[in-house]
Image 1 (cartoon, rainbow, N blue to C red):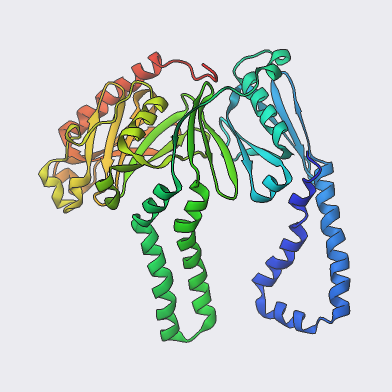
Image 2: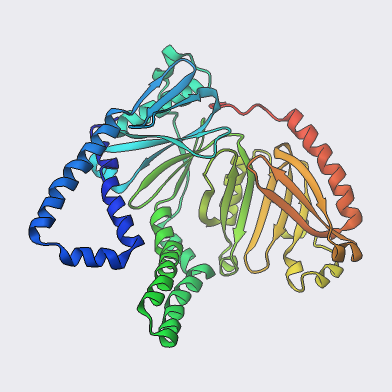
Length: 424
């Protein structure tokens, strides 16, 4: 790893002390009041070398190697761990640069691998070295010979869309969750203080609410700043981040579900947010905000041959569904095309989910006692990303036919689907 990597782990002994102080704040406060200047200097003289030694040893015992068939990562100071990652099972490799890493000119690689819920990572490498290694690993995953893979280089990309900071700011201001969390962070602690006059109770409630408010507004702006989508032979590339820069890839053929989300206040501007479910990957956002026409053109690149159903093409549940979900039943809709199973739900915050037939793993029909009496049923479609898309409140006969037909569409879709390969 890069020589600055020890700094990544050097904070661990400090974190132990901070955790102890948070766990028992009264005891920590008493101990701090007893400290003299001499005791404090002695403590720093012990803590700083211990942190530096721990960071150095974790760096010293971390290695990686690339063989003809796999990437091996060996880590561990006391307990050794060796990860053997087969190259053909790599789905995506993301290059991320936290703020301090950008200053130091280093980056880390995060690897999405089929069958693993947690990403393995290499941190830190020089920024140029990280991109070169990423290109070589993707070339090998695509089937290039080891002796030529390092010569392939990073595939060229063509920019499709860039989200302006002004548009991102307005979209956050027009999101109800932003104002809801800010209002809760202001009102709830005030009411608790008036009721209890207990500072610790107020702080214990206020801090999580302030954190949630920050994450839903400033946190999203910082994370989604300068969002850029580009098209390349190895998939759609996504670059974003104000402080921490991330360079992600949406793997071709691995997208299980695409969702177009329309908050109520966005509809006048015809803006949508595009989210993804990718098998074995944590990539979940394709576009934070974009005009609907542009968003649909990007979706067509993720799901070739798929057109997004419009409102008139989505059939509503029968009117008796209002007895189960008054008013909200109008937000549900369903459309089944030759390419996708499309289900819409939500009245104030609409979400339209598109599942290609080839990605459907199982289909289920569910009916509770009340819905059986009303001759209504839900049809659940399970995907390879361990997620479910549901067509709710359908007529029972329609749901039974949909269950049978969808099973057949999924079988033929998997049979006719092209292989999922890099750089196709």
